[in-house]
Length: 293
Image (cartoon, rainbow, N blue to C red):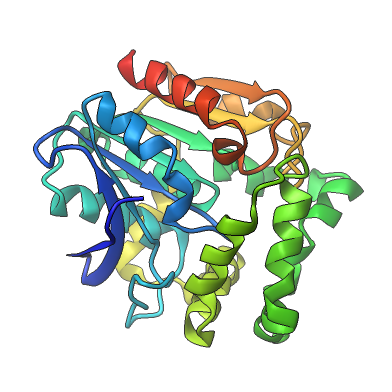
């Protein structure tokens, strides 16, 4: 991975990695939970070789990025960050956006709220949120069980539970979500380093609390928040692992109905939630082919 750098956008300092020339079209890569910008280590150089300025920031609240003074962790705030980072890095209409997990949610919102900024996009492992929330109580018991951590994070026990036994919850989530990925130790270590400080761990949990509690929403991000569940204009490639232990492949069958016109959905055989780490060469090919289209 390249040297860690820092930039200010949307009133917040973001740590980031980059590859490729700064004057090339921007390719912004957004991670999710429990993850960090390190997980884009396979895709960044491939994007740079394809002629992009590839950038992977740590999301708001994930060290070394800052903790927002307004305490905003709603999905619309992350989408606003993506559009602000586009501005900060001098992006234009040829920029592309790639997001995994919470980064996928942010990608949907950023492209729907500012389609003129993003030519194409890729999302992974979390389908469009409009469909997810609408169907949430129609899921079977298996999906409810997989979603236990979301319910835990709504409680006052969340921080203590997530920190206990050297953050063993994070180890367990990676093991359950990507059961075929045997090399997660490095990635998990980076996550724990990023969230070890209680304030940063609380920030990561705050994303989930804001998901179901509108009282935690900040009005400044109202437009982006509304865009989170909208169907935008930017074509999106949606990738989902057939062995995903976070959101089952059976749950995402209707995702294509919530993607913009010209989009495509593909199930990636034999991969779990962190498919860009499990099958990096295949995912790189899929992403680059889509962006070249």
